[in-house]
Length: 240
Image (cartoon, rainbow, N blue to C red; front, side, top):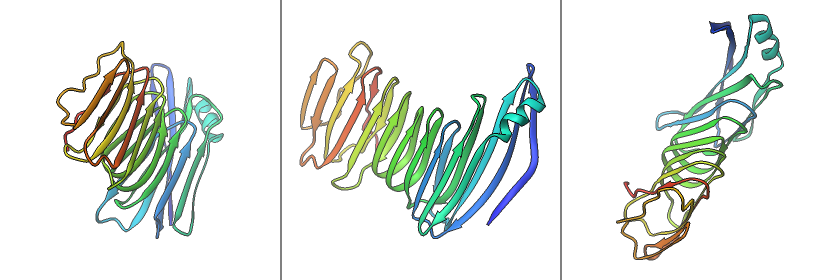
């Protein structure tokens, strides 16, 4: 099922106009969501009561006037299709001042492959296996295996699966990673030694700290955690 909202939102401020339209889709029987846009945001929010995946796609563009904004927006392209249990959402834009935002609400048990080339990716209240990539990436109340790649900042709170794997990389930003206090972690962290990163009182059995590298483990250390943040600082509180 899909619902098209034909009304356009036009906002004029400081000689800049934004035009946007939205389209909504609903899919049943989904176990994996794959969503990718070149410009814009990708957001998945899990719910214990959801049985279907509801997707809201917003196509927008900015310009100095309404007609120019509408022309830019007309070049945006997107799709949302399901094949078996796999939902594919794609969005592409032709102009710098244009983008496609994806908001999906669905079951909390869900595998995810989400990316935005130059925007943000957000995941909240999800259990599963996920790969997230964006300029900035946020994962809240996430349980499972997780791979994150960001050009900018990362903020993640993760409860790993038993014998699970967590891999987090920021190419040019800071990393805030929250992990369970007593989990049997094997942690390797790379960070910028010129910036302030603290690894005190984390309760590991074994620790090694050198110039830009922190390695620690808590027996039996069967959950692998790798955090690479070579040009930023790392905040690694064990708060769960």
